[in-house]
Amino acid sequence: MQTTSLRKGENTGLMTAPVVLAVSVQGLAADVSALMLGADGRVRSDDDLVFYNHPAQDGVSIVGSTVTADLVRVPADVDRVVVVVSADPLQPRAVFTRAPFLSITQTGSPVRSFTAPDFTSGETVVVLAELYRRDDGWKIRAVGQGYASGLAGLATDYGVDVESEPAAIPAPLPAQGRRNSGSAGPAVDLSKVQRMAPGLLAPARHASKALVDRDIANRRAAVYLILDHGYDMKELYESFAVQAFAERVLALSATLDDDGSVPVIFSSGRQPFLEEIRLDNYRGRIGQLHTQVDWRRGRVAESMRRAVQHYQESGAADPAFIVAQVGDEPWDKAEVRSLLQNTASLGVFWLFVGFGRGKLAFYKNLNASASATFTNVAFYDASKNPGSVPDERFYAGLVDAFATWLRH
Image (cartoon, rainbow, N blue to C red; front, side, top):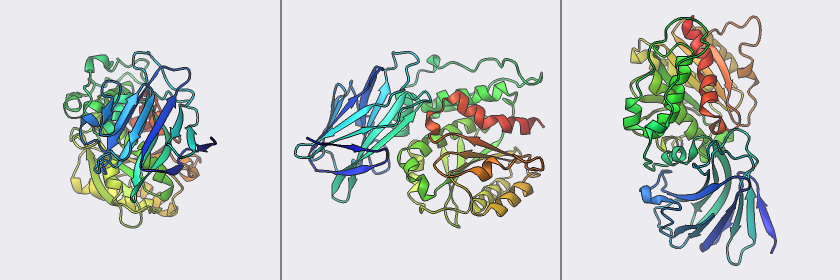
């Protein structure tokens, strides 16, 4: 029987009948699991994580590395079934290099297959594919999104309570070879993160260590997050790359600001949408919020203006650290430049973080010329898949320029 190959991001229809998804991994011991998600992108309960210790739930079952979903039996309140492959946690430092292979079969239909692009950034878990409802039927999408957070980190994105083992997570180490001799004070107390959001404890510790290494562990800042909601970002929202990015920014905020929340502004159209992501609601939060926003190339300057307005109205005494994720060039470049200049004296630092498929030359070159005057601006290229960037490297990219700005 002829096999049809899917490319990353492609989808195809399914019959409402059992579908068998067989996963093959070369050169790495790996586990296969499935998550059953509601329309809000979260599991209904912890039982919706189907894996080797809980191999069947409501029509979805796992035998070895094969997932079978009897689509007739899947309850109506399950909107999606996500197939996940994770490196065996008993295999130290095991990461994906060659992508898993997925075979999709249904009786009476041609065999379909999917192989994601190979991975190069220390990915330990891969969201391989998702089955999802569309109209009165089902479809399957080839995802192929890698993360460096492990299965426990990914599971928390979907609302699964995973018991943390804080003792197994290394505490921040003393800074070596610091850039100056000033004392940075003790590392940030992360007991609030451990109590309210244990799934963020590991990235929060890496964020704390990044601050200690740069002698700013005793400094505080109000962290903001601006997210691009242009149509070209759709795949990155659907593959949870934006959710994972927001979680890592929240973990950084927990080390800089003790309120446990980050105002989030979606850049779309003329009316930026402002909400917040908190330690007590972060699981699946971006998926819940972004569906309320149109897919549209937004006015970046308007979103920036909204963030500054919120910061000024809050009366915060600490500086603002505004992380603006950008996926393409802004069309309001003159306004963006003007805002950057006008906020230099307001205690506002801007970090533009680029990921996506668009061109980002404007942001990359903001401080490229000798005549650049944006002392409160930096750019960090987080690659097309920021979730695959290891925490240590990710937080270095986030805080390097900010630390330099704070110390001067």
